[in-house]
Each structure stands twice: as C-alpha cells, then as structure tokens.
Length: 263
Length: 259
Image: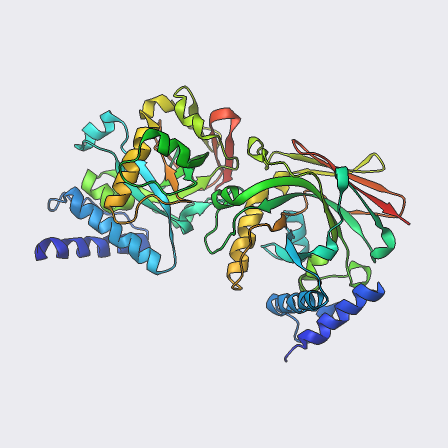
C-alpha cells in the first residue's frame, strides 16, 4: 500500500504550527519501513524551505545502546537542523519560551562544525577529524509531535528525529587536545545535576556518529557540507523541562552552554 | 614476459580464493621465484579490483621497517601495502575476528595528510603536509599458514593487511619527532607488547620513502590518506573474545571489543 508521504508530512507540519500532538504515524498501514519515514521527513523539510527556512546541519539520534535497544534498532537515525530551530546563545546562554514546544526534553551533546564536505561511503573518523573546524557543547531540545512520546522508529524518523530546537556554546577550535570519547558531560537543571555521561555514550565516540551520518547520507545520494553543524548524539538521558528552568550543559574541556526556559 | 604475467594472474586468483574461503596456504615463493616487482604487480592489481568494486583506497601501511627484519627477509627496504576504506574500524566499533584467517594485532602510529605528498619530498614539506597523527592497531591477516612467507609472498598478499583500528584522538604531528614515545598493546587483558618509536628509525624518512613508493605504484600519497608507520614491537594473536587495548603518546589510548 502506498503511503501518502505528503499527507503525513502535512499532519506533522500542522502539529508544529498548532502545538497539538498527533496520533502515532506507525498506526498508518504501510508505514513499516524507515525509508518511507525519511521521505516524510524530507517532505516536511521541503515545506519549511519553501517558507524561507534554511538547512544549517544535521542531528544524529538513537546513538546510545539503551535507546537502540528500546527502539529495536542497531543503527542511529538522523534529522535536519534548520535555521528556525537554532537558539542563538550569546555568551553561551539562550532563552526560549517553553510554550514553543509540545513536550520538551533537554539533552547534552557535542556539536561539530565542518570546514570541508564529508561524502561517503567509507568515511572514517580520520576523515571526520580532518574535516572538523571546531566542536562545542550543545543542548538539543527534543520534542515530539506525537502524543505522549508514543513513538516507534518510523515516528521519530518522520518527525525530524524528534528535534525541537538546539543551542550551541562557544566553538572550540583547539578540540584536538581532547579525547572526545572521554569527555564528561553534565547537565544541570537549576543547578541540580539531572543527567550525565561521556562522549563514549554515543556509539563509542562522537566522531564515529558523524562518520555514520556521512555514510548514511551517501546511501541517499546526499553529503555533509562545509559549514554544517552536526549534533552528534545525546551523551546522557533526556530530561523533561518546564518554564522557569535553566538548563546548563558542561562538556569537559569545552565552554558551557545554557538555555533558559521562559513562560 | 607472457610467462610472468600469467604467474601474477594465477597468484592473484589463488590469494582471492584463500581470502574468500578463509583458508591459509603455503608460500608461493617455495614453488617458484617471486620477485618483488611481480609481487607489487599482484598487489596493485588486487587494490585496483577492490577500488572498482567500490572499496576506495584509504592510504597505505608500511612493514619491515627495522634493519633486522629486513635482513631476516632478505630485502634492503621496507614494504608497503594498500589500505581500503572497508578495512577501517572506527572507535566504538567491534573487531570482527571471524572475518579474518589468522589475525594478529600490533600497535602503530599513523599519520593523516592534509595535502598530497609527491615523489622526492623534503622533510619540511612532509611535516607540513601531515594533518595529524593517530594511534592505531594494525590487524594483520596473512594468507600464509603460520606467517611463513618470503618478502615476495607478503608483498603480493598486500603486506598482510587485514584491518586497522582507529584511535579517537588526533595527535600533533610532532609526536613523530620524539623517539622516546612508547606504544603498548594489551590483548584480552593479558599478553602485551611494547616498544619505543625510536626502534622504528626515522618516521619522517619513512613517509618520504612511502610517498616515493606510492608514486611508483601508480597512485601517490594523497590528501586524506592514512599512512601506518609500522610497529615497534612484535604482533600478538587476536583472540576470538575480549578486547584490544593500545596506549600511545600524550596519553592517547584505544579500546576495541572483539566480536
């Protein structure tokens, strides 16, 4: 049965606009395979671009063993970072009304800034290291347009890998002095430790995630571009957030980043 | 002439068959002389075939760097082998032990190039062309039973190239200039080998040699290529379970699970 890609992309777009969640897409017959879900994501992105938005990079999801087991998959997924999802963080602090989201959660990650394109197949971490201009601590606000986060793999892939918004701390160009697998991540909510992990939580090394993405995109005839920002995957459990909370993420060796959630 | 070409093709077919069946064999050189030129011809032909099948060349590896190993094998220079993209194992990925015939592992420093290095490069040019160094583990996998081979045999067999486990931290190129840096390998928490970079001779001279050799093999050392600079210690058999751990300069380390 042919799945109506545009219809489902339209439903997601409406959920974005109205902030009213929709029922899981996996309940639609014929939406069993992930390729159809990526086509929905692409259709949703295309709508945004028509409205004047721009692609600024990608995010990688499902990079932890725990998440992959939960979703019954053995590889990550990815979403598209749009200009409209970027929360500027002057001096490392961003601010956003919580009402912009449906059911937001915060994650601590390492962001990569590319200075050269990465074109698969066969991209390795050596290529990622060569192509990386800088890295930064980042906060991804994940959000689901699916009611109560009742998502399966196809739901989150279609829903832009559940991306809500993102903030990136000051870029560090001397990142080569760090072993990103050993970098510790701590996420505080109003000063209280709420989530933590290390770079190795993401497939063993954040750069391995970026290499995976470049190779995955190649299988779809796409590549990572110079100037792209890549969120390489959450390094600890996602934490629900509410108005009045300040979420601060520190990654060892990098400047911190924070997001203030306002009413 | 025709005879030599036929020999090369026959050797290529025999090697491919060994790899596909994961069965070791005896030395070719024990049956008939296998000159290095012929052996490199076999190696390059096999690399081209892999390339055509979509497995691009990712760089090169050096072997037989020490004068004592060279004497033992009856050669007066190191040997070089091709690395392909499918041979590279990223941090966090497992080492697929079942994919190999008789794998052995050894710790090596590698360098990654920011630009092409042509033949006849000078030291300064080489150092300027290196983007970064990387701690790696070379997974050797000879087709010759018990690793009993001549120089011609091992060259034809792509310098025993099996796979390369990549470290997770780019190191400054000047680690190559300090021979006191040590590389250490631990397998399954037990057997270990260790050696100093100084035991490998002058790494910059080896890069220059590799650049010349890569040009003579028809491709050259290119931007983005990875070059493995040889192990300062003996190789250890890869067990079927456990982990491979390597430690290197500036606190660099690498841990890879065996699958």
